[in-house]
Image 1 (cartoon, rainbow, N blue to C red):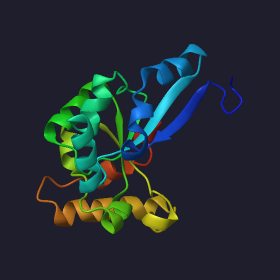
Image 2 (cartoon, rainbow, N blue to C red; image 1 turned 30 degrees about the vertical axis):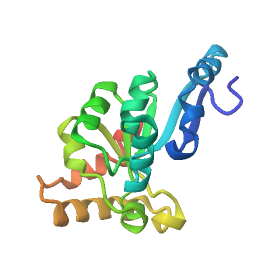
Image 3 (cartoon, rainbow, N blue to C red; image 1 turned 45 degrees about the vertical axis):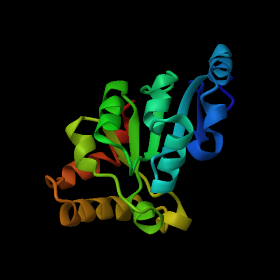
Length: 178
């Protein structure tokens, strides 16, 4: 208890195509919370078309619907990527209070699509920007990453432009917002 944190917050990261069965096992989640650990879940969701299809074939719905059905999707859920989130998935996320982590360089490099952040922002979803690491994200420079978010969104997405202030919020205020 508290060995890694003052407030008993622990991060657990999952990938839906490799461990969703264990992840949605509510005995696992309840076992963690029984010991007074306030679990923050980080999960890669809807990152690419193949992952999206695997989850839909196995569970008959999107990763977001699976998480919601299992009672796991809430303000302590940190969703990484989300390139294949549908409008209904975004509505579910908005109602849950979960956060989406946008890694545009990684997604442009290895994924086949990028999250339309305008749709997330319209729903007032807490949106943060991260690099996704040096292998797929070309480094850890968060300022370069947020600049790419701004450039990509305002040049290539046929949607409302995103302001520099809104992008800055994604690396300052938004990550600090529960």
